[in-house]
Length: 172
Image 1 (spheres, helix red, strand yellow):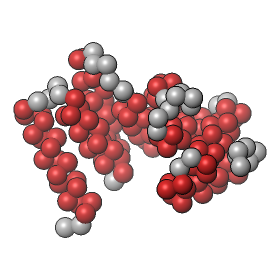
Image 2: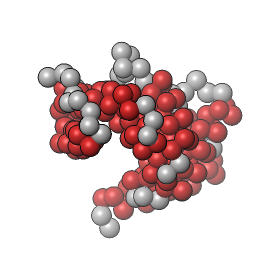
Image 3: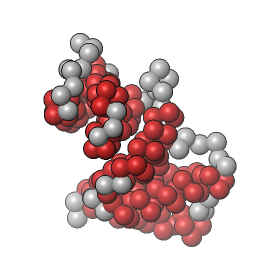
């Protein structure tokens, strides 16, 4: 069994435990989100969407003062991958509002949200200038603020900039 398979197995066990014993705990809500991200990574989009929705509903039901950016992002990218562009844009807009650029403590996550929203806007054929701004923002963050992620995301972001005929990223 590989590392990913072992991690997935353990995550499944954690989610099952949580559902039985502490479905409303913050840790269990976060476990749902991690499981949903794992399902999304494995391209099981419908299953991922259901778990992200369950996570959001739990947080909303508890009226917890929690950061809901992860489930909003997850619902956004999952709907984007399923071709539900209007829903994707709505969730990603909300996620971006939760992580303002000036206050973001995790710029890599801000870049992921900006990139996903730009992809959704471009796919919808809506607000090209804003999509380009978001693509540039993501590229700038990957280039300047996140050296460890540069290899993984910068090239893809710059390819999107070129395909959308956007001006190059602005910061150097």
